[in-house]
Length: 518
Image 1 (tube, rainbow, N blue to C red):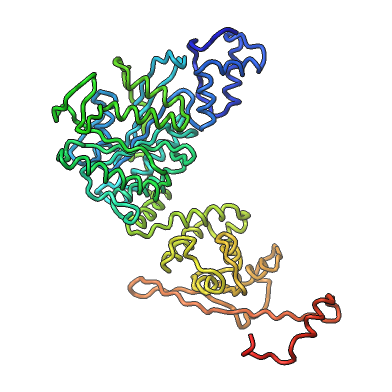
Image 2: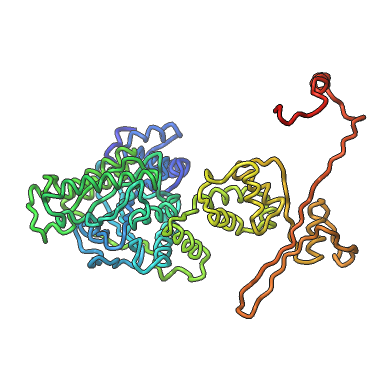
């Protein structure tokens, strides 16, 4: 076959090794491939080897993606302009100028890997923790999410790098003991809304960038940078679960501050070459996560003196979100809880994941809102994590305060939350006689396709009615008649087989129970 290391080839976008292998088979006339073994030998080609590796890591085999996230006004857009060395996004004075999530992409002349169609994209979007309020925050996070879900490639693969931008002037980043600051809440928002699409804890690809270095007095800059770096790493570990991420300091407007240039790089106060420090950190991040495509694309594009043109790619605007979208309502609720320090998104997810495993008929009986309702019930009782939910009879006592208890719900929660109880009480609730009969038949496992009016009988003691009335102020008052059921079991001793060991233990028991001798 010869040495193909420098041969330029086109790599298609695919999400599995099988797809890539099939593509190579389809090009056998070009590569003179006779069998699969020769496809394996093509791994000598660095581009093909890197493409197979990218697919394995759930990354794009022909494009590197850098996703920028940050608080409004932190300097995301100016960072993009600086990276591309072009004015391609609007910048403002401390307020988010970005109203949509947009991809900026460029082609790369890659002679080292030999991938003819290698590209790089940077994705910018609305700033998080927007001053307009929780609803705007929820829409901004969903804007990123919808962008990823509708992107031709990112709908099925992860971005190569997650770059989270923070302003060094932000005096309230927080730490592991204080996670109620705007920056910490932003990280919670990322975890809540985007973690499944962008975070990989096995091969972390998160980098934090501290902007506006020159705005810090020179004598304090070293101490400030060190303190902020420590705080960011604490928050990253405690909220995102990303341990010891790289943190890089940059200046977004080096020319305005008159920074000295040397070898095409600006010299920062700590003698680091800027933005070489950022490029090297990005390359090292990709190298450490074995992301060869990302490493090559970033290394080639950002170190090239003749960068190619930048073009807008895929985009998604906040305006495209539907006002009555259930996800917006859910996001607003969850983000409100985050802001109030009552985040129960983790608890909801645990219950929701277990709920989706239930048979469809049980899901329909309980209702799709059960995960949120139950988690909210726990939060009302000052419980926000599974660890805080009591065990045994205390769990049962807590459950009996729930407004809509049922046998199937209790059974589900005991299994989902891994809680056991010594006894079971069920509080049935029925709106009318027909509802009572229908549910009784369901509990007995009977399915009778006749009008319920044909079923005769009076409601006996224990029938529970839930009713509601509206007063003149349009407030609803709910009243409930609660029943408790005690089940008595009678054993036929004559038919019960007892082991001899059990009989011997019975014989040695004292004739009278002495309460003081326990």
